[in-house]
Image (cartoon, rainbow, N blue to C red):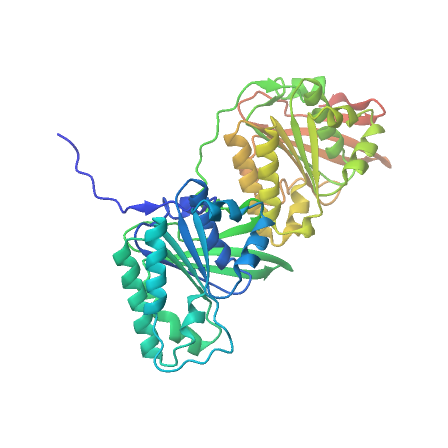
Length: 473
């Protein structure tokens, strides 16, 4: 006996990174979808990338623009690494420049039948099954009657359905109550409705996408951040991350023999390690010792630093006997530095994920969790850290994260950003004042899957690196 299965909706993959995951496969095939957004939200680019990715795979499409010139579209998209001209020459992409002359005078009743006749001819000539119509509201301005305007749009919707093309329409977000009422019927007409937003959070610009409805299909209903950078749009569906982490693997040395003994032999692959402590406690020195040892052993290490430049970090570590220059020279170490305020958390994340994809490191060092709060909001920083930790765990990468706590004897704040439950190993570094002398102490707070020391250990930083001195009973 075979189990009865419910029919599933036919879908057209957008091939826009992250979007098909949110749409559970893509846009509805042979139906009309709608994108609504304000200026700078990425409406036109979504419509064009939907066609561009398909054209690269050999599926032809037509992009109709009522605002931008075709030449401008080619120039703008070239900044993302796209070359539209060969696709146009091969008949896989057609840029239909349908801008309305602002001096045009409409006589009689304007309709879209002539426009549909031209589009029908081009669809048949190309064998196109994908159509993007950008800024359809601009065309509708030629109609002064609201009821006739709605009838023309309904006629367009019906015609597209009859042609069995997958259509994507874009329209500007409502500016006021009258504008919202004027175009609200579009939300009901389309089979899939996506809202885009470009807002300011913590003085940083951030873009968000939300799927409002999708007839006949489930979808991710949360707000999702996205960025527009080469090679295109990248969505970051943090709430859709699954727990598909690899099991903790073999151990590699921390770079300190004494520390290896305290945590059962070293850090395990696919593990997350948090090194926390106040300023000057030795967090960066400990991470650099690990980095140097890993690179010397043939591992690739990616260092994401939000506090020091590459030159400053490398120079500072020389005083503790750690020379990172050879590792940088032979390519086993790459430092990716930036001020947290330089861009939003989403752009920082895409930058890091692209670096991981290109380098394929076995270890990632991130300094620091506390600096990530300056990326915009604490929630944005939390999502950044969540995604970084999950990505590393899924790829079997060891990730070391530092966090700066406040005060000399702070024992309460571990991660400072709410990620401590995701961490496999926590090492706390403390500065303790005894008889007017500041001493350094190290404590292994936890180490999953390992027998580890539960004592405080004195250590010092010399010109030969970190030396763990003795146990404090």
